[in-house]
Length: 622
Image (cartoon, rainbow, N blue to C red; front, side):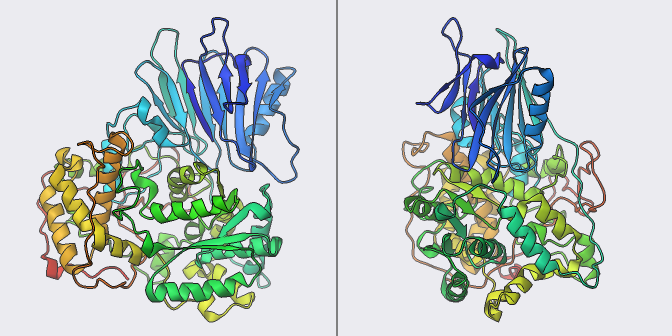
């Protein structure tokens, strides 16, 4: 929620608000300011500078809470006791916030338990601290030096939440963490990030005979949504038809009939036809307008898309950013300011490993060809050597689940660049606690969400669609049309990931040939492609490539190979390399976290893996 550039710590009383620039500026007697702080301003947010005695103070930017009194831009605490009380109240705020403590000795940045719009940090060679909610803002102040462990985590689908990023010189303030910046006059700046204590999680409970989980969930979701201060007439609810966004959107329709707009990225083929029928029924619940965008017209890595034109992008933004951003642009053109999403629904309904085992389920097979030690075969020698380090320095488990927090870092900038603010009710601590407390039977296949739709009178197709609706077939189609040839062209042009030992060029070329011939194992093309292309975009000026052109070739190819029509969809991605599940009753400390999963045996350096021929590759996960 902040952008800032601070040369060194200073007395916050010297900050002055500059309306024209929308930022706090440090004014000094010599006229040489020591920095500036720009809060992200939005109707759903409020910011304030609190000044205390003794040259201390803090700036906070936080989500507005419905019914709370409006705050002044500046407030002076009359004494130390009053300042300490205000500081404690600030960190106890129930919604998302970012707080900057300021004094002449240090700058401290603290994130809320929500981990929203996390601040990324770097120090320039001259010692200045730069921070922003948009990592791309920091490229001019840092290098493109890679963090080797983060690269391997990305390539092996190992979702570890930590303060580290793909760029070695950029760190992120994770949920409840505190970053401390110190610098003496004439010296270099020092930056340290301290993780918090772990959060507590609930155990499943046995329900009373008269318990009604659906009613409890419905009431709690309405209460959670009404915490935020938003205007229904400038609000959009994602309504893809999935169980998560659908339940959030229906609650908004109940609270504000006929006032909230909806939007969705539409699927293709029979999946899109089913999605359209289901959305038609759902919208009868009482919404305003509707925004729809056909994803097949805006495929990932399309030659006329922003990535192919050389626009900078972060590899972790996901494959569907082209379509999503166009949809967000439509929201803005229609006057929207807030977007409610279903983010967090998959996580709160997730079964624990022991619950899956008791139900007779099995861990899904990975959608990658793997070697003897569960490593993707496309890894190079350096990538294999770093497998053991993937679980190092992980943030402790917090009140919100890791995968949600990772999504925040990737998604929030796309909304905020457009003046939108996303709200994610299913990630609220209250919803997480309720879901964790439910028996596994209520979380299996999102029974809680589906039964609510049935009670509201929706059809069987709405509550239990026969065809799975996700974006897998869109990614499959995009990689067939554009991905294979683009990855091959990047290899021909000289892959950075290959040159630095993270990827095996021969194996990647073989992957491209196999995918072109079989249409299987989409992720073996997609993951190396988006990382290589993304890193190239970060390494060069916007819109320019290594040779004075966009980093991607303009590629327009007809569909080729078997299965070029929209095919069946794979299930959501789950790989054995993921963090080992933690028992919900166990609190794991920062230093007590397991560093490697018990079911993962890191590969030995130089291990030769037997590759199956293309015609013997396993079938995709369904």
